[in-house]
Length: 305
Image 1 (cartoon, helix red, strand yellow):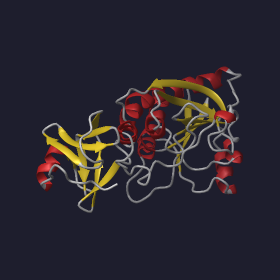
Image 2 (cartoon, one colour):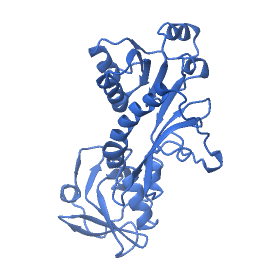
Image 3 (cartoon, one colour):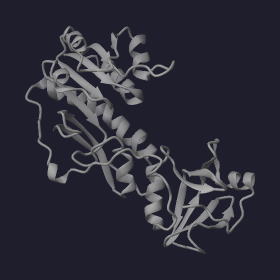
Image 4 (cartoon, rainbow, N blue to C red):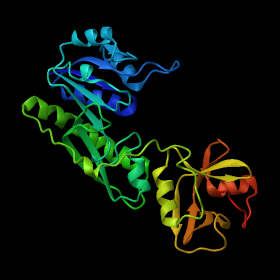
């Protein structure tokens, strides 16, 4: 088939590379977001290196953009990590329409931070979907889905890069094959079971040490590496990345109860967090023990909520 591949960042680039390596289809154009600054998006850079046509419209409702899209005579548009709105008039230009990747088991976790939130909520499974996008937010009919396990110590980094990312590339080829074979699945989502969460941002990632240790452990995992769960020490942001937890609590919540080579123990509700890797005041990530030595951290120090 003749494909338009639309995407951005690492997954978009890898999806394009996977399609080209498979050698079954002709990529007639690559669409990605307009440049921001001097650095090119990885998918744009890879596409140009491989002699592909790259388009970067900032408005898919523009008649000239739509007319140009029609000239490619595409059979299918594969939307591999797309965060801009693409209206129906553009999605429907290819003969078989458009399919879109989303890193959750829709209708759960619609929205932009769909890997963070299952970890934050303590879920034990996640996954990905390829669906037929409509004008709703991740509401279109399902083409295929794949599940991944979320372990008790997984982070967003491990779930995405070790599980969802490689499985998503396999699913990209499978989704295209389903469309090529004819009569592909179009399963209506059960909207009564839908959940939607917004961006997992700095406000979400703030640590309240009065919350239970289980809740905080999940929050830190679900924000590692981005956006990074944080607290305040000496008026500056202290982000906590790698950590463990214990049911043992000593002292008042938010206070440092122990400093060892293994990390910094901070009392939370019904237990403690042992921070192992941190970033302070926008600096480099270091071990918690190194941070403690650098700033002269003492047991009993109160971290802000």
